[in-house]
Length: 258
Length: 124
Image (cartoon, each protein chain N blue to C red):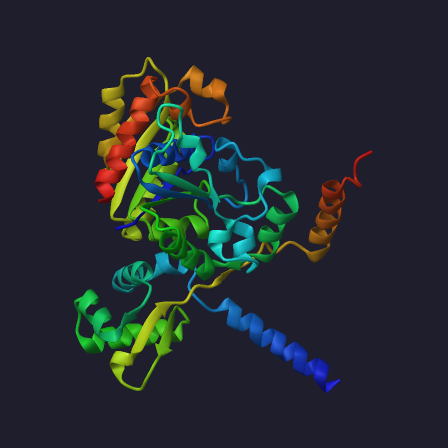
């Protein structure tokens, strides 16, 4: 049965889109059909991590929301990113539904709004028409209409936070709202943790504060910073410890959602 | 003149119609029982009255009152496929996400500037 996974953070800059892209690639490498949708309409960008630029995008989520096309026509098959020389014919697939990076289209959404019911129908239609095993939703940071909708229809919510006081407060709000929306599963990922931090202590603090499991603690990593969203880290550096951590999160996401 | 008045009235009615519906903020502020039912229906997409009763775990009368109130508020849409109760379905009715309420001249100035920069006319 298909599952919808929202990846959210209360504040920007937590590494949410990078983690979403890495999770999608890891799950697809296991032979699953994965959709990734960028609902961060006001500040989109996950397509860059998949190696797409604006010039390659004929259609985006915006076109669907304005009734210009069915949602699957805004989906790009980016499965080539997971195929390697060693494994050129993996069964898995990734479909990316980007949001437009054109300034005029972003301001149009801000100015005119859109039909939220259409977004909800779009999520379902994508899962059905692309025969997806997983739909990963890269949400807008903070809480807005599309983020709340994404949370409400998710089977699992992955909340990304940094060990930062503002993130702690904001994550409490997100988790409180997610519980009100009856999200069945919650996982917390601590990202950009200083390598010298006491990870066990952090895990314990977070789990007791939010009463939710910590799926992983990811250290602030120079290689990841150097990559600068110009690719999918776990595909570039499969042997890196951070890639092993991503695989561990993916296993929990799939296990939790099954 | 009457055509103009009619158009304006129609426009106003359309705007009111679009404004009806459930926002996610509305959902969060519903009482627990109603919110839980709506959360379930969001996932389910459509349900009959008897399915809503089973899900709510409350009496038929209590669920009828709840559902009628949600329909009245414009949060639920009734889909009638026949006169029998089993042929009536209920769906969540979403409100359109409203655009930001900046003065129109700000948007047109922004459009003009962005239009120029996207077509390269604004570059010196």
